Length: 113
Length: 113
Image 1 (cartoon, each protein chain N blue to C red):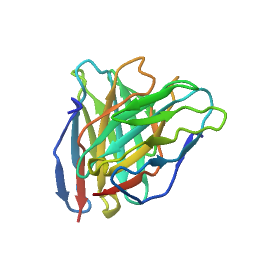
Image 2: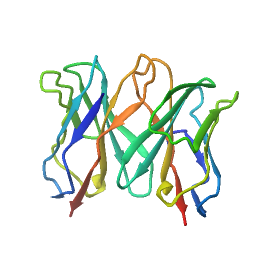
Image 3: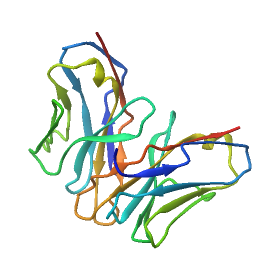
């Protein structure tokens, strides 16, 4: 079945550092890929998405590129801020029946001033 | 604000009891999904309804059931509750043709004592 593997956390960075959170997937067909973010005490917010190979999703300075050849969708940000501290989830969406999401285990990011 | 509402925000109940969680999707969205988030299992898909009909089931226990009403709101019923059912329960909604893009509510935190 479909699955998502995400780098284990927690990740602790200083403000303005470069961020990479690795995500790889296993899927049949042509899934969509997503990054969701969960701030403390809140629900999940869609951060960015990519629906086909070589698509780049971007939002709020975060970027991720859908790499079919390496089955990856790594999240990057060039300069993190304290306000980026949250848990980040990589997710895979399939359809043709049910468009359920399959999530990675999440990576907790803490950014220190 | 995602536009998805969930009530109640918190629920504390005893083992063996039954509870109902409620979700209202974004205006115009026909699909409603339920997910369970726990520390050990992460985010797990439970069930998907589309316009009142069950579309797919995931790791949902037989003690759990759901339905979607004609006004598109959904309820998740949890019965014979066990300590291990303590978790965050999220509802998400999506519109057709968005290739898996889902919008999440703030969640209901269930504590079984």
